[in-house]
Image 1 (tube, helix red, strand yellow):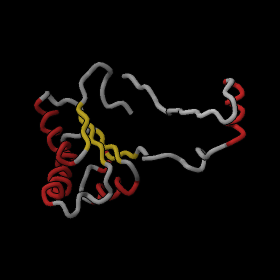
Image 2 (spheres, helix red, strand yellow):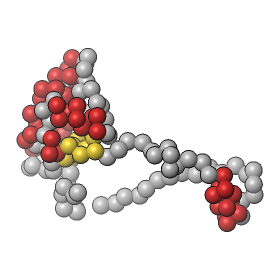
Image 3 (cartoon, rainbow, N blue to C red):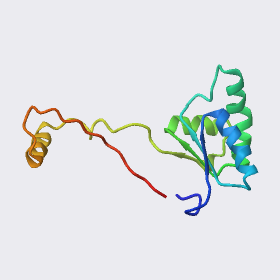
Image 4 (cartoon, helix red, strand yellow):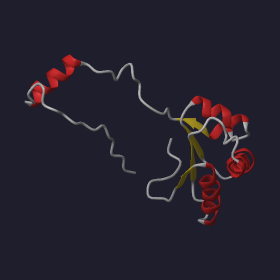
Length: 134
């Protein structure tokens, strides 16, 4: 879901300290839309300052200043909801690849090599990427 109109400003952050600072920055920019990224399922246990931010300040900020919080998995979403992060703002975009559907297929590789005119045994380097503009 889009959280801002095309052409407007958006503040996006990742990591607990950056999330805290981004919240203040977004407010200073005139209530600019804010999105956080969470890639942890433990809430920074064992780290004094980071844990304080993750477990005390950021849950409070999430209720007031953040439009979306993107988590890398269900465990991260549930862990942060349990810490008091705004549950309705926590969304999961899975981290990683489906290794079952993305496994090697020698027959498909041979067919693609033939289609592209690449001789069997020739080294091929590929890259999977996406260009996204908004």
